[in-house]
Image 1 (cartoon, rainbow, N blue to C red):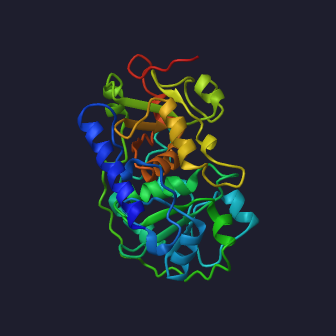
Image 2 (image 1 turned 135 degrees about the vertical axis):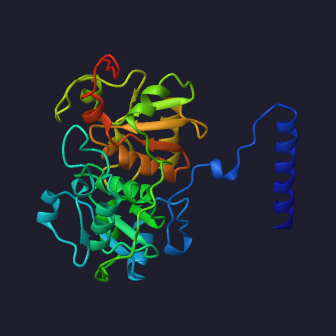
Image 3 (image 1 turned 30 degrees about the horizontal axis):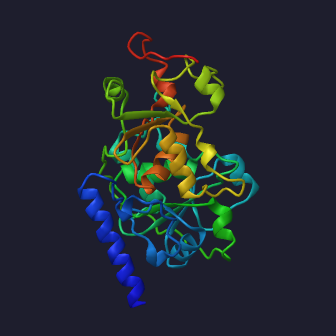
Length: 314
């Protein structure tokens, strides 16, 4: 053991020497791909936005609030006893073209979240169906983080991954909760800032819609077709396996690198109404990337004057 430790120390010293001489970079441990938190005890809420089914199960057994973020169609097929039910539309502006944006009135948001049982110090586990859904769990997780809740996570593999761990003995929500929003702009960008930032060489804009949407099709009510100039297409479900779990993180990072994305990049994700891009923002922030969600997305952007908010087609 001592010999192995000495060898490791020598290797690190050698690497540092080479790095200081300009030969090779030394990668900090936190920049390496890591797996999701596998137990409740291992969760670092500032770092971990995504946790394993086991970790989520343990949180639930410890009394975490559970939010069922699935769409109404999936909720009709199966219910989650004692979970607080919400759909993304409940927490978004009601009308087009700003339907993707989060509710702006803090008093309305507080009332809605408290009715769900959201409290400042109670951890939250958000569940959905990664295979058949639209990334609603990631959207709700992103929304709650953006409103200032710092103990909310999404589950790698969704509801199915938690159910595999055992019976879900969910404690009923304690209503009303006591959470009061304290919004941050750290993970959100508005259309005006995005427009002004398009010339920023360090900015990478990702269109996480289906390829047909990126190319100009408008199946979900956009006023105009196409994508933001310079945006790179990357369908969010390319990161999800058949079992609903994320691909190995090294594979995800390889794809991101192919798009020119590093942890020093400023990344903006958008879709049609900020749902899929909200999921994408949640996942990439968990991986340690600097990502913001443009929640207004194509519903909002495409409704603006074309000369000021252009779109291009491939």
